[in-house]
Amino acid sequence: IEPEEDVNYIQKVISNTVDTKKIKFVVFRIEEEEYAIKVTNVKEIIRIPQITKLPNLPDYITGLCGLRGGLLPVIDCRKLLGMPKHDFNENSRIIVADIYGKTVGLISDKVLEVIDVEEAAVKEPPSSFKRINGGVLNGMVILDDGKRIVMLLAAEKLIKVDGIDEAMKQHSPSLGNL
Image (cartoon, rainbow, N blue to C red; front, side, top):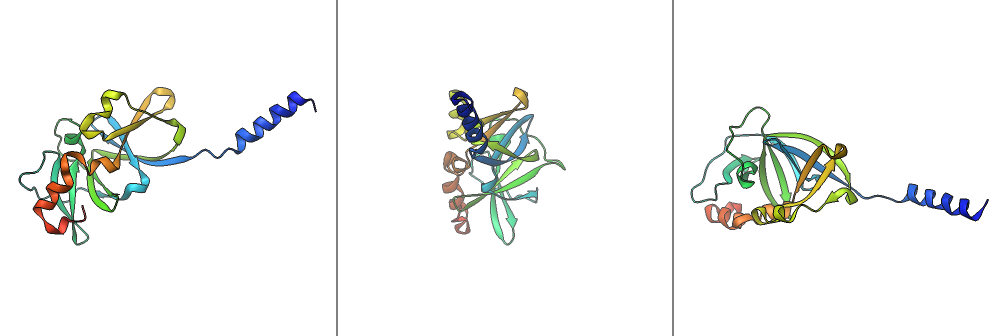
């Protein structure tokens, strides 16, 4: 074997054995846009139950719903991201997310799929997007040769937006785990 062939062979073996780190995301739709949150943050996905509205909360906090004997604060992702109000329908779902031990529900128009994405495929969002609602958008993935863009939500920032944790604690001591 010539040295040049040997180097090419070694490079092929290395490139085939390098363990590319993949991240799983739950992809959901709001309006016509696709968003995602890490699967590791998702506890379950449920249909929209009866939601009790509470006074003096930011507009994007829809209210509370009961979940297995507890209370779940629910965020309307449409309002959080500045999209127009839309009535819930049979496709609407709440993504129940566990973010650093705090449970919150995220309303989506439709849950689409779970995808595996190579960590290297996650791109930084444009700087103007980073400022939206305290930086809840923290990345994007371009799929299908650029025909599909999925925006990634920073779960840890969802619970910090406009002091959601403080606002919810004011309304119920039982929400202290939020």
